[in-house]
Amino acid sequence: MPTANWSAAADAASALVAGWNEGDAPGGAILAFDTRKIHVAVAAGLENLATRTLFSSDTVVRYASVTKHVLAAMQRHHRAQVGLEDRLGRHLPELRGPMAEVTVGRALDMTGGLPDVRETLSLLGLPYHAVTEAAPVLDFIASLGALNFPAGTEVSYSNTGYRLVETALARQGHRFEDFLQAEIAPALGIDWHAPERWADTVPGLAPGYWRGGEGWQLATAGLHLSASGSLTGSARALAVWGQAVLADHGPAAGVLAEQAALRHLSDGRATRYGLGLTHSTLGSVALVGHGGSHVGYKTYLLLAPEAGAGVVVVANREDVASYNMALRTLAALLDQPLPAAASLPEGLYAEPGTGHWLEVKGTTASFLGASEALYESGDGWAVSLSAHLPMRLRAADAGIEGEIGHVRRFFLPVAPDGILEQVQGRWSCPDYHASFDIEGDGLFMGTGPARTRASLRPLGEGRLLAETADGPWPKQYSLRFDGAGVALTANRSRIVHYERE
Image (cartoon, rainbow, N blue to C red; front, side):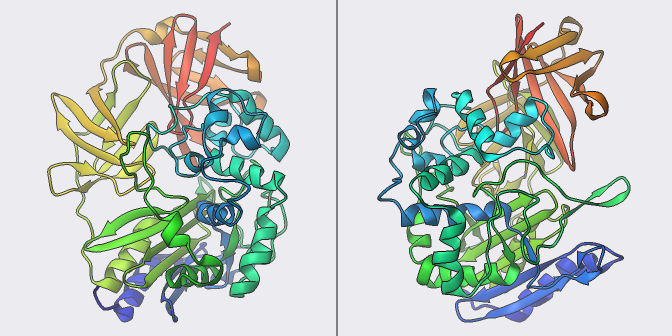
């Protein structure tokens, strides 16, 4: 393993955050550490635009999906009651259909096919800031029954599995917040909390921000928070936890050995997504980590276990590429080369016979609305570095071929058809009291001043691509028409159907 160069890491981190000090803007922090010491602690920007308080290593933020491996550690702690091979339906009897048959392990390793709650609600017209509570959300999940794909056949990101496993543990008397306060916080001397609602008071929590048309806006979200992303704490607290993970110490003992162990698809192929932790490489160095993204917050925990070093990135601003920043800091620390960008022929492509599409712009590929940067693999393929959206693609036969999510796929350039003229009017989903109207080249959903318009583009084969905004994020989904029905497909939810009124 290369010798750690803490000075180089500090220089790289300082350069990465320098722009956050320009004007009154939110900020963040980058920390680099080994098992003995936090050697680098760089912060910039403001933790609160109203009070103009400077961001520091002790500023409290939302870790978002970095929470996942901590919930998986809780499951491991109570595996005698909620085991990885247990069916979800054993602990949550209200689940039905194939959803009930998904195992706890597949719910946690992103191979379960569980439709993401937030994205499913979005396809039914519920905006991201609409407030929901735990019990109705669980009832909604239970009513779905269907999966995005047969469990064990694909890797695709979803928060739903973590929500369901957290609920299963709670029914055995084990609450996530209690686990934090009993097993982790006192042992490591850190202040961690897991609020259940965005509006819950958290000591010291910095507001999150996103840049709108009128400048920086306060971030808000309405979905009941689960242990898929509820954890809050500071950059320093996350680094202390990272040190314990690297040292295999205290409440973090076994995290690397068990939760970062390789998981497999039903056909035996290994994936790079474990139990809340992912695998990647940087030059000759193997990495383990996970990122997090809530509206207005970005986080990354990236560890190089063999080198005994790690990096934490946190921010209270939406425009932060936290993985790229962590990777660049670690590359400087360990003197490793950054991966080279790759490209494919630009354009909009669709997979014959499905509602799936792929859009390529420059060095970025977007599959079902989820984007990943592409890098050279060294063997002629363009690959993503993501374990939860793995891509391996190349140009072939006037299209693009390869794998996404470990599933073989072939995309052809879009050939427009006349479907738009045939599908004008109202479409409804009676089970959830949802509807939308297609008028001209627009899709309208919602009521009153909250009514939104999505622009429509043809995908061929009786399909359309809808594009709009959901708060600070772009929102894309396809509509695949079949007679009097239409299936809506997005990256994390592929089960919603409407019918013509």
